[in-house]
Image 1 (cartoon, rainbow, N blue to C red):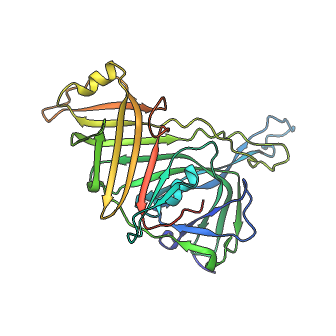
Image 2 (image 1 turned 90 degrees about the vertical axis):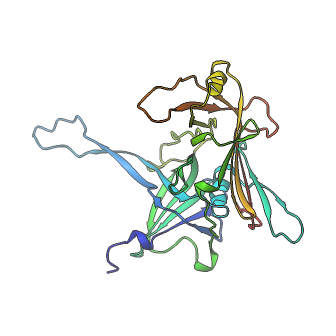
Image 3 (image 1 turned 120 degrees about the horizontal axis):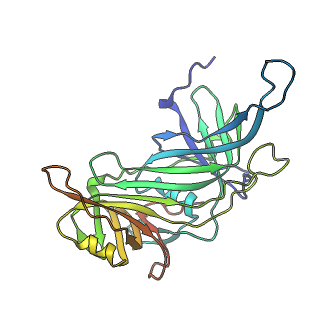
Length: 321
């Protein structure tokens, strides 16, 4: 017996698919850094109303199988790109100046999303593989002195429990990792650097349709169709004046940009068009007053041609999703 599985020795791997729930003939994967992985399958069970002439419960009815969960990952300049590629598809990549070995990768929404398989590798020799996975949501919060992480929500089709990995060791790439920290972040509002925000949260729902169950599919999903991407979040800032209240009252379109830099590598998050919801600050005590304003991002007209964009500068030549 291998004994109890230990989280400290577990691994998370991503395997790009050629079609939903279909891996290529030669399976290749990427082993990513992560803090937790709750992606798993669950099945509803309900009691029937059948009368059997006795008080004993009748056999329960089993429902559809739901494969969902979150992977919490540290944000960095290299490995995080694989999750962005899983969410948005292969980025537009350009090489930097000759001799720098740097590449610029631009991720933004497209008409479709790639699918992939996610494998949890347990230390006791058990492998959980969920096929037909897509990114359903990304959540991030910038600010403070805690660990900078992203919570990536997955929705998938089918789980199998195996005694061997989906790919051989030589086809697994353990991706590079170059951690970013909150103190390395800067914020621009309407193109101007500011130092008044204490926190900026960002939630990106991908609007996926989770109802793709079909007769004969064994209770598993057979498709996951794309929907509307509608980023939202909250800006928490020092209450220095009524600038943000005025923006909310006049429905002024505002541009937000967060930049995290570590040496010659960086991550830039552009939210080119947002509107703040009106909310005036309260007085909760004797300390300095802050204001919290919810915002919604959208696309109307901007030079990025997108409601959200991530730009990574690093030494990774390509993201193969």
